[in-house]
Amino acid sequence: YIQEMGEKLQIWKKRLCGWHVGHRMPPGITGTSWLIKNQLIYIAIRFLLFFYMIAALAAQLRDQEIVTPTTTYGLGNGVAPFWTYWIFNTNWSYTLLAWYMFIAVIQSALVYRKKPEKFGHWETYIWAHFQLTWAAAWTVTFGFWVLLVGIGCGPRGTCTFNWYSWNGHGINTVVMLIEAFLNQMPFHSVHSWACVIYCGAWEILSVIWWSKTGYWTYSIQDPSGFLGPAAYLFYPLMILLYIIFFFWGKLFQNLLNRIPPFKRRGKLPAEWYEEEDSHSKSVEMQP
Image 1 (tube, helix red, strand yellow):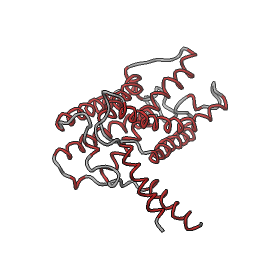
Image 2 (cartoon, one colour; image 1 turned 60 degrees about the vertical axis):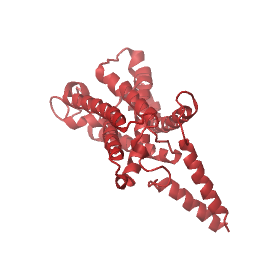
Image 3 (cartoon, one colour; image 1 turned 60 degrees about the horizontal axis):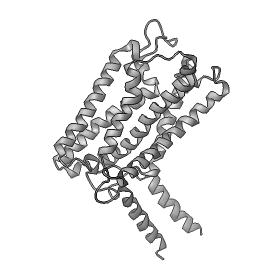
Image 4 (cartoon, helix red, strand yellow; image 1 turned 180 degrees about the vertical axis):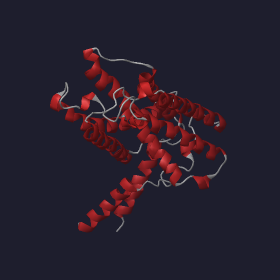
C-alpha cells in the first residue's frame, strides 16, 4: 500500500512540477493558429496586438500624472517615483500581457522559419505564460469594475475614468480574447497553481508597500476604511478570482471546440491529456 501511494505521489509530482510538455503538445503549436493557415498573416496579427500593447504601455509610462498616484506616499515632494507604476496589480498584468505578445510573435516567426530546435522549454514557457496572462487580464478587469468601482467609488460617486481606465481594464481583455480565439494552446488544470504564486507575490509586495509607506495600493485593502475588517477578504478573493478566470479560459476554449462555425478541426486539445492520463493508468496497472 505504501509503495502504491508513493508511485501515485510521484505521478502527481510530475504533473504539478513537470513544465516540460514536449510529450503533451505537438512541437510548434504555440506559434500556430487553428484558423489562420497562412503563417505570415498570423505573425502580422500577433505583431499588431503586440504593437498596440507596447505603444499603450509606453504612453502610460510617459504620463506620470495619470499612471502614478498624485500623493507622494511619504516618499518625497512632487510626483511619486517612476517605479510606483508597478505597485498596482493592473499594471503588473498589463506589462505581463505586453511581454507575452512579444514572445508570441517571436515563436510564430520561429515556426515560419521551421526551427524546431528552438522549441522545447521555450515553447513550454510561452504556453504557461499564456494561461497566466489570460487569468490576469480577466481578473483585473472584473476586479476593477465590480470591486473597485461597483463596491468602492461607484456608490460614493467618486469615480473618475479616462482612456487608461478602459485600456487597462477592458481593452486588455479584448486582446486576450483575440489571442485565445486564434491560437491552439489549451488550458491545463494543474497549471492553475501559477496563478496562486503570481497573485500571492503581488499581495505580499502590496503589504510590504503598506508597511513601508503607510498607504494601501487600493482603498479596498484598508481594514480601517469603508469595508472595515471585511477588507481582509480581499486577499483570498483575489487569488480565487485568478483561479476562476483560469478555468473560465478552459471553458471558453472547450466551447470553441464544439460550437459551429468555430469548431476546431482535428484533435481537440483536451484529448491530448486524456491520452496521457490513459497511458499513466495503463502503466500503473502493470504488475
